[in-house]
Image 1 (cartoon, one colour):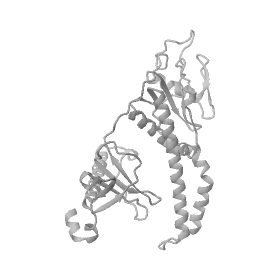
Image 2 (cartoon, helix red, strand yellow):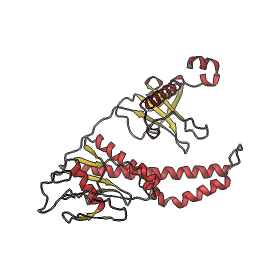
Image 3 (tube, one colour):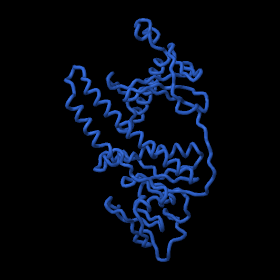
Image 4 (cartoon, helix red, strand yellow):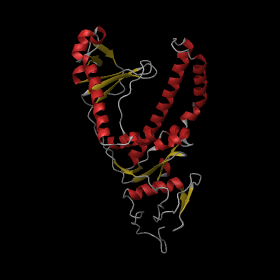
Length: 336
């Protein structure tokens, strides 16, 4: 069908057939996945859903090229259709890429990302382990005081500028059906630039912290926390600024890259269990209570530090822990 359409429309024939075929394949794959979800009778919130079409002004151009649609020669990227690009390389490719994706971001900058086989770069063994608990007051609290990640608050720092640019856009927003003015386009670009800066700051901080944690520890017990529900709470703004999902993804990717052992721990009841004796409180602690006090053994510790210790125990990295495995329980101590 694509071949027939290219013969009927000159504008379609002017483009390369490789990315056009890939778009059709991606659409077919998403449609198959949506039908599988329907047959499996998954609830609506768990379904992948059909691909949503965006308006031309809102959609970001993205072109996927398979191996026969591009080649690298003399440091330049040659794409199907006679397109040759001079690329500013961020780093050398470790292997021959199997596919390439060319896309444009919100600032109008073009990027090319390549798919290459993953390579492991082992680090020297340290013999140390660490437990990591995610939070809002601090992005990451660990069992090591020197590896805690404080809340960077990049979004809060940029909030004043962002509000000013958004007000400029609101004042200069063109009526429906009319072209935007130069002032509106400039304010929109400044807004996108500020969003991009904050996102890069969060990612850079997450990568540097993840590198430090992975370099100093062999095994990582990480809370398998999904902060999506925080978007509906009163902490939505602060939780989004903490960028827990980005930090967690960077930590897992960095650990896998350097051959470290990552153990994801289910977050249920981690704030209720004692990291010393394993006793569980009868009631969940309110968020305003930041100190954990065990009623069984009398241990007192910061709430997040206690949760980080529970991560180690549940990951099997501490012989004395919760879940009925407590060889070092003090006399007279009994789990609640």
